[in-house]
Image 1 (cartoon, rainbow, N blue to C red):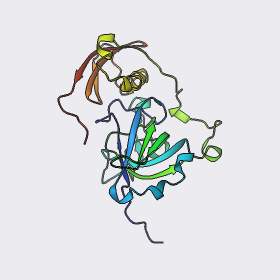
Image 2 (cartoon, helix red, strand yellow; image 1 turned 90 degrees about the vertical axis):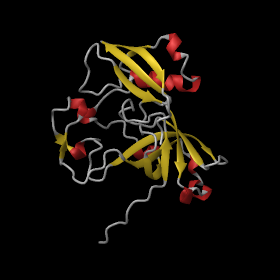
Image 3 (tube, one colour; image 1 turned 180 degrees about the vertical axis):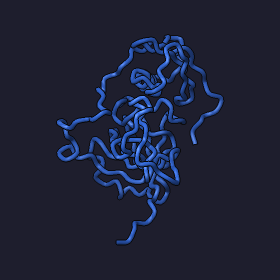
Image 4 (cartoon, helix red, strand yellow; image 1 turned 135 degrees about the vertical axis):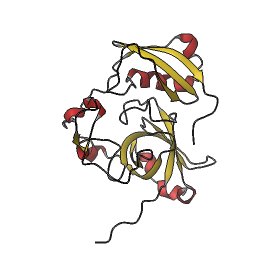
Length: 235
């Protein structure tokens, strides 16, 4: 059997996360986050999207572009287990995989057919860093892809937000209205690394054009500071 040819990058995502810190741990956890999928020039063909508008959700197959390695390990240390317990790589969604591929289900909000770089896809609930290369897009099929009875193993977690967020009004008003709910929901999901949850420590991450700094005390997350970045960190 002939091995497949190299995968082609068909698109990149434009999101509000220039770095991986703060990105939701899975797709669909924060539906208030918006992103845009921009196709590479060779794939900006409206015919390739014919019929896609009839689907509410789509699958994205993409690359962990910041985690590509020459070698791979059969076991990894999932952050959810404290970063000390090894599990089989195929029992996790770790980025450190033989082919560094990611899979995300996102809501397709609309297709912009007429944009300058169109057609483009406007999606919600993505867990991808800005600039992430996308290899393929497939429609989500509720009758085949949904399994409510499925078990979640050691990675099971409710979709409910886990923290109460205290975002001082004088800081929140600096954030553009269209981005506020997404940022609040990201904070409620507790963006700290699962194995680094030190009381009193100040954490920070980049979101859109801002650096967000916060502390967590029990079930309360307090935003301490919000700074406008000097330069947009996007690629």
